[in-house]
Length: 383
Image 1 (cartoon, helix red, strand yellow):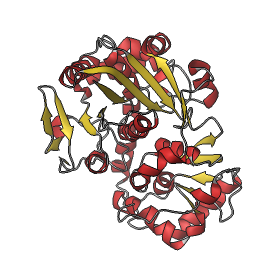
Image 2 (tube, one colour):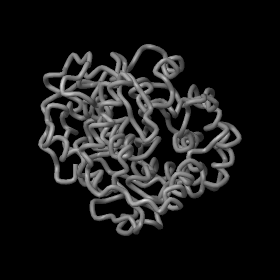
Image 3 (cartoon, one colour):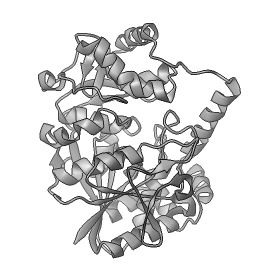
């Protein structure tokens, strides 16, 4: 029998699902169903990519397609999934929300049948999947809400695993723990992260990088995303919590409302009604502003601009920043952003506290595992 994993938020949660799958003792590679829904610095087209926007997908049954190493997004779209497929043992199957939660449910039901699965596990880093929907700091609930809604009615047990409470910069750790309860089913450690260091050297997910950092023992204040959201790595940050689907749906008003949607547009309208906003509106507005400004992005890391940003961040009480945060705040092109980590790790290795960047050479971290974490992995060509 098999388990189908569902990455609630896309590629970062797909990587987290692979990490957690091994950590909880599921030794055999799994099927991980995931969106191709990237930040604009990776994919300049707002929103999730459909199956029609890729070449080289491998059919799986009638409703599903697997992403393989030779899969290519059709320009100008971008995606990290083909490279992730090349480096994971697990099979990545593309979730296509074009037909709303109903279409996603059809996909998952087929996967359950094809693989004779006896369980479905939804994986979310941060906690959006269990949000109520009206939290003022909630920024991107639609993807997670659709993923949860798609599992409603699946005729095998469904569990939702939440890792890294609050590490996506939206709900706070306290808000997440108020729903999950204080007792984790697993605390991730260095041994759980080591097999994935090569992937984490290049993968752009911030929340999963923070989960890895916490598992390695890093503690302190981190700034992430283009908006500079602040999160704190605590002793609870490496923990994984388990909830029954029924408990999640009872709390997540958006997921409950999305259950019978048949289009992405309908799902967006429901998100606006329930949550007061929809992340696709933010993505479209950001893309439109960039196009209207006709602004040329920076084609190579600007060391002076990065140092100025570090000084300002330290003044705000920040210990670490993500590489994506640096790339976005200094307006790097996607190619320059891919090379940023290698550039900084080579020129200023004392600040490379893997997998994060310290804003000072002697960070004011409360890191219990700093000596091990500070030894950077060999930078990858596109890291």
